Image 1 (cartoon, one colour):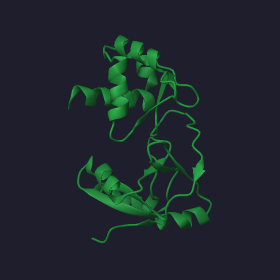
Image 2 (cartoon, one colour):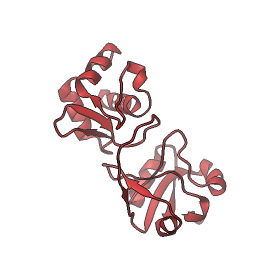
Image 3 (cartoon, rainbow, N blue to C red):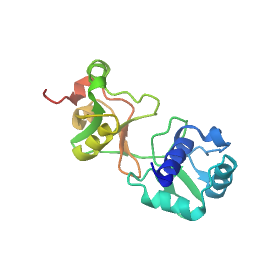
Image 4 (cartoon, rainbow, N blue to C red):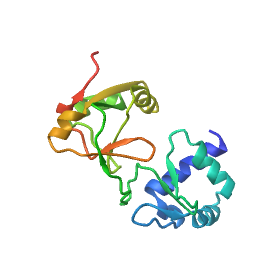
Length: 181
């Protein structure tokens, strides 16, 4: 793992799950001051320059981070386990979304559906390829298909993050299509 990848993983950890690990404070919408982040990360022994931070944000293939328009604040785009309100509006998704996982979770998903685990929402992808990449992080990927229109009909609401990830609190099993094996 490169130094940049390590720093990106730490940023995700601090901005999504553990701001307290370096004494960082997130506002209600998940934002924190860039200068405060740089000072606190240096205090934790992780030196990140402003230019490095901008490069980490711009170069992140999953666009995990958002900068404010004036560049003075930063937040994670989604995936939080801490209580924040990203102020994402409810949106109508495409007819089908995808979820990447691995075989060892399939039996549980068949029983309980998709649950957010430690996150606040279940993450869904607009493309099968993205779901395969997500699942592949933990082994041989299994891609589930999520039927969105029945969910909408039954009162579920979807939101989409700045980086294109579709979010929903949970997906019961009856709305899922499993691969034939």
